[in-house]
Length: 295
Image 1 (cartoon, rainbow, N blue to C red):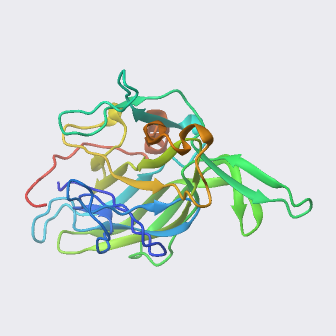
Image 2: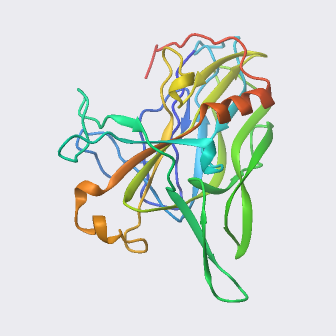
């Protein structure tokens, strides 16, 4: 089984995030800049609508004309009440700066539940600005132009947001594509749109982890779970990144000039939320081994 990586393409924005991409992932546009490590960096601007493209590069075996076809995909986002997702933040040292691991990356730790994302709308009757606590993605809608697949959306109540000027209090938090057969000689993609929520407090970016299950045949699967409690031996996180628009959403006084106080957080669906959707879709079955024959 080839590994899955999720990358999100926002057609409407020039600022995107991208990492590795393989069997299933979110399509990569041309790079717009490089990170200090030389990796392509593309980011989603908060409070903007983006088009995403979950692509499937081949079936489950990655062998020419292989018999183990991909027959379904389940994608789960943390777009749900805040109690349904976990927040990870960098571990701070005695000097107040993030601790780094051997690879030079921040060491992440579970943080107390705090309000990270918000949306707002103007009340038509009073003109008053109303703010809501939300998940990272709002108004998620899958495309109907998909490979003949059937698509089921799972909705959850959230704090609320503005949809065409009206209040909406629920949002899609999982998508299930099924009813197709993709063998290794074929490629396809699955499109959806969503709006990135605003970031609160001193959060300058939020990496949103998106678990994906690639179903093979009737019951076998490869899990690409974002949650540590559900990771297999070769699983790795699929993710995208929301960045702050400091023009329309300036930092509060405590971190307006102190860069060390600004936070890069990571958000993942909780293990309980992931298991909930696995029960509803009757997945998983037997975990298939990954194949790393190509990158």
